[in-house]
Length: 86
Image 1 (cartoon, rainbow, N blue to C red):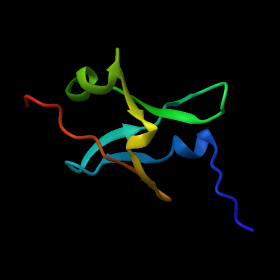
Image 2 (image 1 turned 30 degrees about the vertical axis):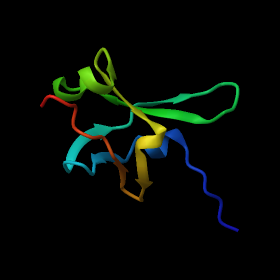
Image 3 (image 1 turned 90 degrees about the vertical axis):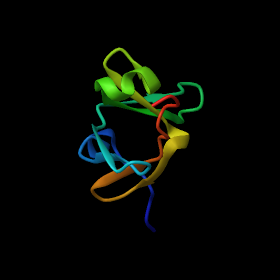
Image 4 (image 1 turned 180 degrees about the vertical axis):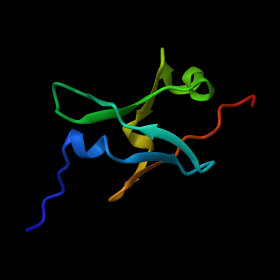
């Protein structure tokens, strides 16, 4: 029986790609977890100037779990629309 589990160290090796514009956002450095339910709430990626104002805190890009489309063997696909007014 195959289990669908993954360790944080495995997530950190995957490149995160935004499918809306094919932009590489970087690699996962951390995850945000709800300590009551144990559910993953978001992926955290080191920030860049373009996305910090949209999904970030300081120098991090926070990608809510609902925006994760697919986790593959080498990459994580996310769907982040361009911020309005761009």
